[in-house]
Image 1: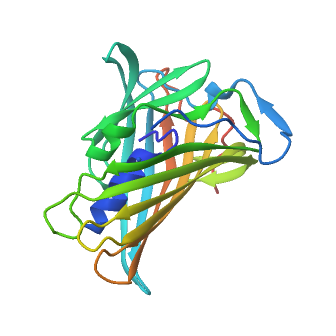
Image 2: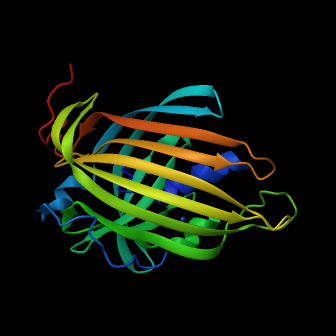
Length: 274
């Protein structure tokens, strides 16, 4: 789960609705403020050479009004090589346990315009309606914001209210590039990591009652030049289809070790964490 960004959404939607019971082309970029920095070599922050391997230390917290679970896990992400999907050559990432959800493969394509996500295995009914979609744009303007997903009336592929019919869902996701800042992870300290945030809402329309419930997902991620994903924090609000109670889920993964295909551990400016 190099989880370029997510979100980044593929894992977010899968986890969100596993616990309960995302496209079209992104719109025109709108700057949050006039850009103060334009990064042209942004591809260096998302290395995808075959053989690259990342080891992440993960934590998952679950609860409602009070915390009810605290789990720890390890996820190893590795670039396996290239495959062709519908005539398009994509890069394959294999993750052993992203978000503590078990093994998965995910598919990306990087070009001069940015990075596009082409789905995952195992995938979901919802994801297959969304892919491919852009998750990062090149060059990267800091600060900037773009609407990543805005789709209505999709098939959720799940029967949450147990009436025998699949629910429909509206998906909205916005990605913001915030800043460059220092970040400390088990692998070391990285002084100029790029901070991105993705905010997603999913309005699920229940077929039995005609009511709508909303789930939210906010993921903040940091990327370092020559290394890739250093850390992400994902916070989800998960509604119940049968009552007013909400569940909260927080997932954190932090880089423990990066081994690039050329064999030197953790390049890119990281200093040992004390």
